[in-house]
Amino acid sequence: MKKALFVVPLALFFISCQQKPSEKTMEAPKPAEQPAQVERKEEAVSDKGIGPIKEVKLGPIDQNLAKKGKEIFDSKCASCHKLEEKYVGPPLKGVTKRRKPEWIMNMILNPAEMVQKDPIAKGHLAEYPTQMPFQDISQEDARAILEYLRSIDEK
Image (cartoon, rainbow, N blue to C red):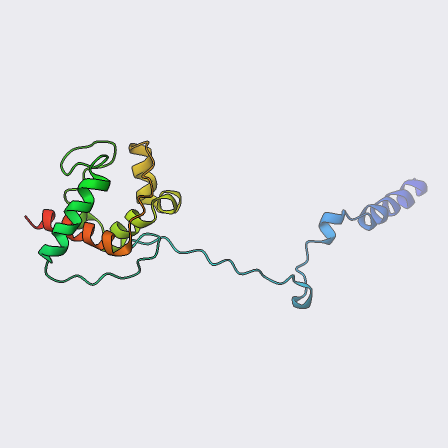
């Protein structure tokens, strides 16, 4: 019996001394020991989309700009988009009522990144399994397309 009283405390002593390495590292490192933080600047997903357009100031519809936008739309967009029916891409009538102008322009100018990071654009890719291609459209031409879509939605 005396031997058991000696062995049990000795065993408990050895067990407590054999702390696992992962248990030893549970303490938070001291501030001086923390590795330098690398800043990652990711653009926040917003209702303005992801791309170069941060703000669009709208006024009354510019009919000359809308006319130019229709020409660009007919040559670069109409093969995949119709105004009132699903086609390769979603119908665009009413898009200016559903989306901010910045989102529309960023989708035109930056479709690949929009589909990767913007939840609305991702949803469109799930519904329309063809990725919208980059059409090499300038910001001025994207603004003209926006004006054309606004003119359609105003009617």
